[in-house]
Amino acid sequence: MIENLENTAKGSFEIFNENNELIVMKLSNAKDEPCTLPKNIIRELVHLYICLEGSISVEITKQHYSFPLKEDTSTLIFIKDFRPELKFNMQPNTKVIGIYISVDRLHSLFSQDASQSPVFDNIGMGKRIIETATNKADVREVAYQLFQKDLSETYQAIYVKGKLLELLSAFFYVANNGNTEQCPYIANEESAAKIKKAKTIIISNLVEAPSLNDLAKMVGLNVRALKEGFKTLYGKPVFTYLFHYRMEEAKKMLELGTLNVSEIAPLVGYSSSSHFITAFKRKYGVTPKQILR
Image (cartoon, rainbow, N blue to C red):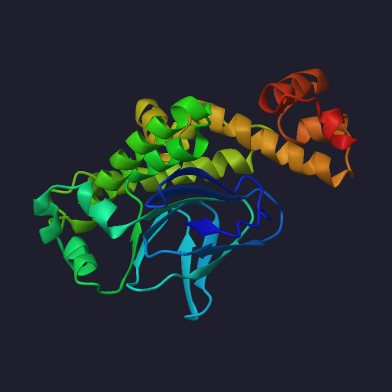
């Protein structure tokens, strides 16, 4: 069980808990400065952290361990007979999925053959595990879906459990497949680098973002590969991602209170204040002036 959740980071909360054996957390920092989120875990669990954006360090305070995670990496942690006090030190604009699962529950999700893999075998023997890896395409996609999807309480549990099975399957398959020639994700790494470059380009050009055709040429992909790859990597189409990023930046500016609506609109790519107001309300359900008050 996770206790003592101090919600100093916007959007950080538990989205699923099944008998304290399977817990899923969204960890995010939407602020402009770093923040710290403390937690206590009162039973022995396997930890899996998937960093989607930004960077975070997982600090195990009493053991003086600290595990940094950068964007697009994951860390699997298991320490037997250890109920840690944790601190998550998150940089601005960080998004992380945290998964906590009991050893028995983790084993029950896989066939008996899976217990022969190094990770499962080491967990069963009580060996300490601290493994970091680059997120692969399937892991990214499902983690983004878990992070972004907000459902009613009626449907939340079944959705999270289904996506969690999908994510764990992808994660452990990638982590334990030593034959890189047959791994289906290795071939996508060059494309993934180009898609990350596309994201950097669009968020660096909020005022006048390039067209999809121009963006594809700039990163060396065809339009279809860019569209499909971007959605896989970031969970949204290119310009949907850009829309949400623009609105998030606009909200930060409004909260600072130094600029008015007509000054902010062109800074995030809107030549018309009325179009900006309409877009902002669609995103947040309130007008920009309501944020300014």
